[in-house]
Every structure is written in structure tokens, then in C-alpha cells.
Length: 260
Image 1 (tube, one colour):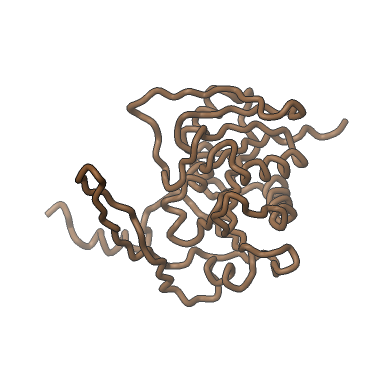
Image 2: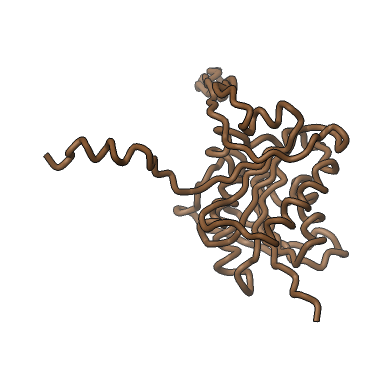
């Protein structure tokens, strides 16, 4: 008897019709039974937002006549997509959740703002092994072909080995040809930040409006970071966790005697 195929939940933050998720679906179909639940419109930068004060809609789609897997378009955020998939759509707990392929990097501090990674984290919270994939190319016409073999390999390793409870993988891929990619580096998240400012303008009606702009500042010169790996033509893989406790500060904080 052949082993049962893993059930793989596919989602993203760029929207269900984005080229990145279509590429990810094609890879995942080689590895298991695929169910897609993704936002009906772009949700980049939504972080771990969830819908509380509005209704959620989730409609089954048939984007091509040849596809045998099921796809659902959700009106909510990436985190909403994972929640509604696990609670209302899937007939069993998925063996894996993959999010992406994001159009643009989610390395370093960007992981905090990322809807792609928040979907993966939400799956991790629910005890589902999860991976977020991002390509460092913001173009709608980005070429995802060079990344497919690496995505397949990383996913196969997760299916085979699993992930520790509370840990998900943040995978970022440089914008290169397959021949130019040197391989995969296991990394830590670089200590970097955005130095932001708002571009203030005035509408024809006289109302002020703003565009968020900024410069990415990498303050980390370590050679074990995701930013170093990407700059040196490697795919970065960072294990992340949703426990935000600053464990190293607990002992010092206890010395404050806050009950005094």
C-alpha cells in the first residue's frame, strides 16, 4: 500500500491570483494533496491582523478546468485564511502549511510586518508545521522558476523531519538565476530596521495625505544572518518562533521588586 499523501494548506498575502502562489501550488502538487485558502486581494504588510469587526466571506473558486485541487478565496487577512481553513474547510488537520511565494523579501525586521509570515506563524500556533517563502523581487512578473527546486527540497525535509512545536521557517530567496544561487544557509535574523518618513502631499480637494517611505538600515555585520546570506547569493532559512518573551531579561526584571 502506498503511503498517504500529506495534506498541504497553501496560502499567501499577495492574493489568490498572484503569480507567486500559483508557482508554489505547482511545487506542492508534486508533494501532496493541496488545498488553497488565500486572500481575495493583496494583503501585504498586514502582519498578524485578524478580522473582528466585519464579516468574512470564503468562496470556492475554479481558476482552471484542469485543476483537481480545491481553492478558496477569503475576504480576510492571511491569518484569517489559516483560521478559517482549519476550522471550516479542511476535513482534517493539514500536515503542512506553506505561505507565499511572496513578491519581495521578508528577511530581518520585515518578518514582523509580513502577512506571508504571519500566515505561517498562525499555522504554527495551531500546531501545524509551516514555512513562509519569499523571493526578493517585488515585480508582478518575477521569475519563480529558479526557486522551485529549492522550495521543493526544503519542503520535503520539513515533511520528513517535522519542526519543533512553536517553530516555523522563514525562507528568503535572492533574485538570481538557478546557476547563480550558491545554495542554502541556515541563519539568524539580522538586526536591522527601517528609518521611515512620511511623504506629505495635498489632494486637489485640499486634504493632506501621506505616503510611507523609508530606508532599510542593516546594523548587523555578522556573517550568519539572513541579510548576509542573501547579499552573498544564498537562500536564507531562519527558524522563528511566536514566543516573544525576552527570556534573558526576566532575572533582571525580577530585581525591580515591582510589588513594593
